[in-house]
Length: 363
Ligand code: NAD
Ligand code: IPM
Ligand code: MN
Image (cartoon, rainbow, N blue to C red; front, side, top):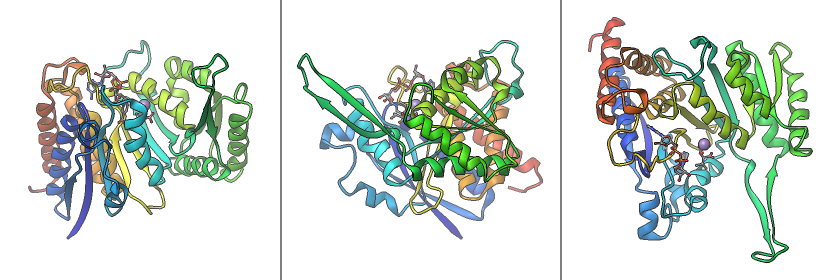
């Protein structure tokens, strides 16, 4: 029987609260299917670990993680540890170190999910963001000159390599072709006269290899306006690391909220493990109250099942999420409900058992 090894980094704040429910759903899906097993290994890394050990993860942490089939991550970052330390020593280190250069973030308004847009049909919000996840504005390069002096200057360098830019754009084209959808590039060549001019050039070059894929190109400021006014313009979207970060929180806001927004950090070559995580953070304002919405973490779990090749199970989980939203009986406060995190996890797990039975399987 195939066994998948999953490293669990629950992390900080609501991270452990939402991952518990994601694991519940993953276990349920695996049990129903019966053809494979999931083994979870907990890693206690995060800001509490930092407080005790002065570091976010073990010295040989990356080697420890390397042998896993996937990483399931909750959230990293909590007041008490400077964000640039906690994130660079754990989350960003993994994304970069394991060459998870593709960040897939679906912005899809499920039935029953709240949407603040007036006069926009549900079907209009259905985009697949493909965010560059390894370089760009997140290269970590820069300089701090004349610190504290009147002539102080700080440089934060965006790094856009030929290899890094081509591979993300090519991945996006291949995805759009596979889905039979258009591809939109979001950039900012009018002001960022090196990085985004280069990005646009590479996009035009790679487009020649995919003449069958319809393309669009937007400046990021206009794109953020159109995402609100006419979201139907966007299907598959490719964009840089920072723009993708910002636009997917915006996207989350129009697709049900951060509590519902999922992401996968993929190393397409499968040389290293890929990582699945909700796109929200540790939410210190609601941590420890048991009211965090686990649906984003559960949706990320569905992405993991798809990555392992169990598309039918991935869809089953998504259907379970959607039914839970439509019924509107067991939801957390951010979705207008009064239920606890664990109750929502139980509800989705129960739903997928019933959906599985209805599809003709005996459990
Ligand atoms: P956040 O995403 O943690 O929270 C923003 C708002 O959304 C808060 O009001 C929060 O309560 C709400 N929210 C988020 N997830 C929710 C959920 N599942 N259910 C209900 N409400 C939810 O962003 P922030 O407050 O800017 O950041 C907090 C910390 O998390 C910072 O240290 C930040 O660096 C870090 N962070 C980590 C990740 C990650 O690990 N992937 C992502 C974003 C932010
Ligand atoms: C995200 C987060 C991270 C990012 C932070 C925590 C470094 O906001 O996953 O969206 O900017 O990529
Ligand atoms: Mn973000």
